[in-house]
Image (cartoon, rainbow, N blue to C red; front, side):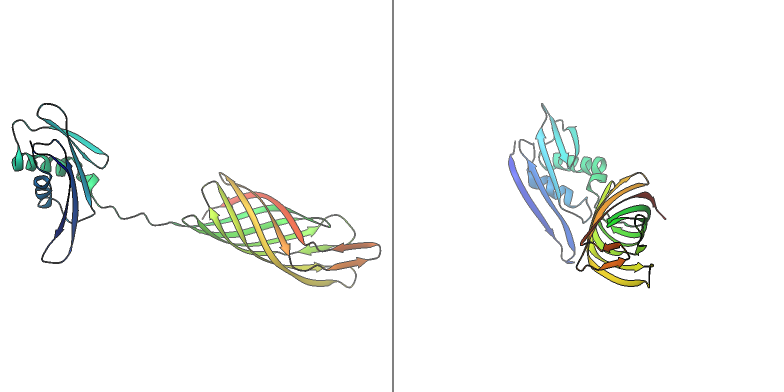
Amino acid sequence: MKCCLAVLVVLASASAHAERTITVRAEGAPFAATDLASALRVRLPDGAPLAVIVEPAGASRIRVAVGDTTRELDLGDRHGPDAARMVALEIVDLALDDLAVMPPPEARTRFAIDVLGSATAWTGMLAGGTADLSIARGSVAFALELAAGERVIGDLHVTSLPVRASIGWRSSWGELRAGAVVAPVVVSDGIGDQTLLAGATASARLHVGRVVLAAGTDAFATQTTYHLRMSTITTPWFAPWVAVGMELVP
């Protein structure tokens, strides 16, 4: 009875192409680890490294493990290279699927369009909506959001049109985004006025089927104050918002 804790066999052919590296642990087996490695070498195609564990399973039986596949074999009175060849044939016949080299899965590119109704805290409140296109590859997502909100309380009529470009992390149930925002602001009362706010944005989204729940805030670098008769409005440093709507997947 020959015993070997571990034998690493690296195959290198004269044709100089990559060959499979075979590691065999055959403690208590009726053959040497090198016998099984040699038998596998001539029966397996080139590919990823292969690890084989052989253990006694009582009387003339052995247990062979290759990855998640385990088999028990009755070797009878076979020993040495003859027994190793029998084990090699069983490995090839019964566990070939486990030995196949599968290419790593490619990250899938996913496009989605969200259409949401939103409310934004200003001096008063802006009510409106958001439409955004997101492109996710794996867990990394890029998004472009086009929003519009109009002040619904107060004498001054103000419309804000934020455009957000962000990058973030996405899973099947949620999403985190951060990026930049520019927001044209239009005042339609009096002689009217226009200004452009710029800054940073951050948001989180929860996906429940096709339903999307979102919350975030826009932080602006400047402020502008407007007066009309007794009414005054100042654009905010921070404009938190919430939204709810649907995700459309092309």
